[in-house]
Image (tube, rainbow, N blue to C red; front, side, top):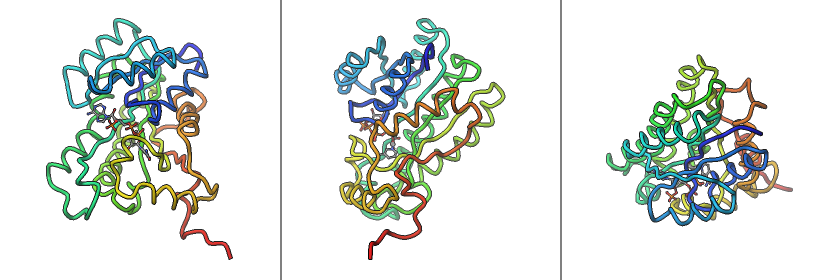
Length: 257
Ligand code: 0WD
């Protein structure tokens, strides 16, 4: 990653998956640019930036088109072009992540799709002019897109749409040799995860029932994310890559006799 520059969207604090990815890229020599969602999160992102030696942070609420345009212009002015882009953002109203899926309101559905799915398309479309030929894009997804996970509800539907979007974007971007992949992480205790009902039970169950008998860390997700953003994965695009201690391959819970 020596000499490579990239934008990472979705650091809320030093427990964020995006933080793990930023750290892994920086350790391999990359220069990283960060964004913060709002003034409430700015101080925390500033702290992370200082710790990691990140020079610039920019405001970006993915639902704000003016901020997206301004971000593209700042990157163009300050960096010219960038080599990688990370989208590590998702949101659904809390009440939609508890109770029954059938009770999902239209407004919660639309919010989840806008912030967790459309934002990827919008980000890639707006930043495409500042992506180098051969650049790599990465988004974060979860197994709830493929299988039922308690309480994940509308976010499972959003992640399914996100994964499909990756496949369609892979074709559009492929003509410029730009790659896009999704990394499907196992459950990790972050700010976003705290909104999901019974999350500690999900953690315990995954630890007990995955082939590696442990949960993954943001460092592990960071290392695999770095590989997908680097030229090491130059032949890989449109993929959903699981970093989950192998949990997704299991057909029934583990039991020891
Ligand atoms: O178990 C987990 N933690 C997993 C998370 C397993 C598999 C996948 N993921 C995904 C999430 O769905 C998300 O796409 O990883 C991505 C990153 O999530 P995270 O690292 O678990 O969570 P967090 O540290 O909270 O970062 C997500 C951030 C937001 O934080 P909060 O919790 O304040 O919503 O996404 C950002 C925000 O900083 N975000 C936005 N950024 C810009 N504009 C917006 C927005 N409108 N909404 C949320």
